[in-house]
Length: 287
Ligand SMILES: Nc1nc2c(ncn2[C@@H]2O[C@H](COP(=O)(O)OP(=O)(O)OP(=O)(O)O)[C@@H](O)[C@H]2O)c(=O)[nH]1
Ligand SMILES: [Mg+2]
Image (tube, rainbow, N blue to C red; front, side, top):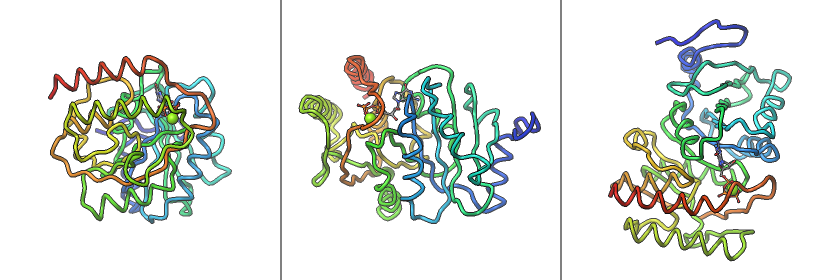
């Protein structure tokens, strides 16, 4: 193992990266995975908000998995988190076994930041679950947080998610829209109906009695649980696949307010409904 060192200015391999972090006692204790497609209007606000909200003193990594967004989502990050703002940008050949089109590691040049950013750019739009999977494969910490880029999942809940998984000793803590005190803001009635219908179908078919929001896209999970899952559905709902394929895990939910995206366009289409039913059939047969 060694990877590729010295491929040009600012190119280091992932093992070197891990060594730097370990040597400095800065190995991340959690990884925040954010899949993006055309989120240039949200991504900087999101990363800034993550940075401002997290009070945990632990080191963490922010992993952006972008499908070569035509709106230049990742250029926004590279323009903001650069030398003049206290970061060094490295080209990385690959992260663990993720070999996408382009990779960057944006690493703080001094001690005032306790996070670094990885950007994984995949050549084509190959779907949300596979983007999250690449994020997971490239991550190096014990706890994985998954969240959307469009500010629907407010970073103000991150501290609580991190605290809860440690205190409750759960394998997964899910931010739920449907737990008491949870809410959805800004969705039309029709969309709430579809979401509730999908939730009802999933809960009944897979006997997820303890979970109020199995379709949530916002949660923290122990990496050990993910290691044992072979994902084979496509589409949107990675949490459902995790819950169906790891039945005996200890789970907990916290209520949160989901806010409909304000900027950028929705990637939702009728294909989502088709993908949902395909996933349900695949997971039912797995069961
Ligand atoms: N890498 C990657 N990210 C995606 C893809 N599709 C969606 N995303 C991202 O996944 C997250 C969830 O997608 P959204 O479009 O917000 O889906 P949604 O929340 O169900 O619907 P809207 O908020 O109405 O658009 C966002 O951060 C998107 O940018 C994809 O094919 N590849
Ligand atoms: Mg969204």
